[in-house]
Image 1 (tube, rainbow, N blue to C red):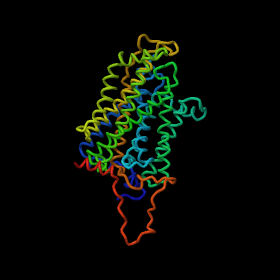
Image 2 (cartoon, rainbow, N blue to C red):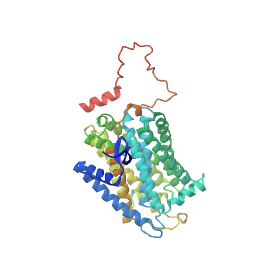
Image 3 (cartoon, rainbow, N blue to C red):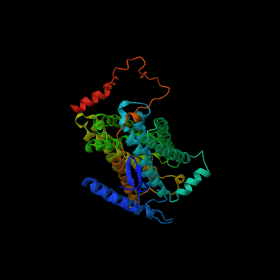
Length: 451
């Protein structure tokens, strides 16, 4: 037993802080892990080491280690930043249906969405910092020289505030502060819409890239965010169900059916916006818009668009959640993986199509007929490391934090919403309290799972 000065309490656990005691505790913890978990951690640590090497190579000024060119200035790191940033918003939008609007079937999302959102946004910040090379200068510039007319400035403001609000939400969630948690969830849900809108506006105001330009770019960004966040929750809750982790009983009966419902909504909206984007691009008159769209549907990006974005990312997930035989936990997992991959491909194609056909001098360097880009090994290493970091830190949270939902955290009572009087002034004190009935919707879901 360690002396009080050499231990601390973290998430309900007594943790030694002395060097020898801590190293001994880590070794004992590793030995107590199942073999599969040790292998999983080993793979993720190796991938993170590869990412760390790529990050170190990207830091020195003047080192040309990215595959970008004057014709193709935004590459894989911009795609990765957008992907992780919008996924954060999607997680909050999906969870807000339970935490903010009080819909019973979406309440199991709460704890896991909050942890994933913080980790996803932290990963996005790390990626954009490496792409910018001088992130400290950007922070001081945004604070000391504000530019309210710039969507990029607002993007920094919203995402910076977003991280603070998410940290407050996680703290209040695990420290039993329901009032603070209530307002943190509400503010996070609002910023979850504003942040991807401003991120989409960063692309949408660039008239030199007609494929990005327009009011539908922010709308597609928010819709893709919702789909990505829902798909990630589908993957996580399948793992929770399969490995019988904390609160696994509600994963198969409530969480996964809810994910299927949200996936269906997200896939429908995104598919409609993709059809509109292609139709508007082929019939558009701005110089460069039609050329970029042709490059997407029948040019050098056609294989990725039709094979990856449309078939794998939209059609197959929709079939998996629509057909009765695949409306199972495994089918939901497959649909979620395909949908999440489709969002990543969609953001990659979106960034590429906006730069692949610069046909006017307004766009800067002109490459005819198409600009070319291939991500460098350093960019690929950073992206792989970012994915591994998210998976590694979330696995630690799943193992060492209490991820089971509680009644204190899942029922948000808004002051302006009338509730039934639960006091016992009109009842005999000797009578036992009536057990609240299970909602018919959830009862039907549970009966379907059991059958």
